[in-house]
Image (cartoon, rainbow, N blue to C red):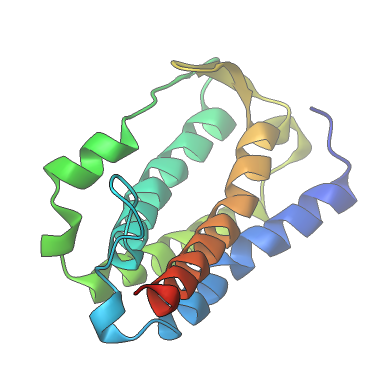
Length: 162
């Protein structure tokens, strides 16, 4: 991918800011709207937070494999199946959000210390092929912002419902 150091630093900053953005979006959602789904098959705000907790734990392991192993295989997972099988609505919200925040803080500290050679490493993603540390950063820097917007969209739809 070949990101400049400045681009990497900008993306790491965006990555680090993700949990606060996610928490702020969730804070806008009234308790009674948190488990509301805007459409069949769509996730509620509660499910989005639980997904983010699962995603962050996977992401934290992925970047460590990419940074520290030679040619790792990065295994994909069916996020919709996980949401159903884990019954996200039955899981408590506060610990899920805490996992997101703690995992991001810990991984941000690691990212800021990775040498250039770690950023040049790549592995093979089981679903999408070649997958490098910079690809990882680009994806996950945007991930929580995307879900914060999704939560805000859910809230807007909840307010506009019949």
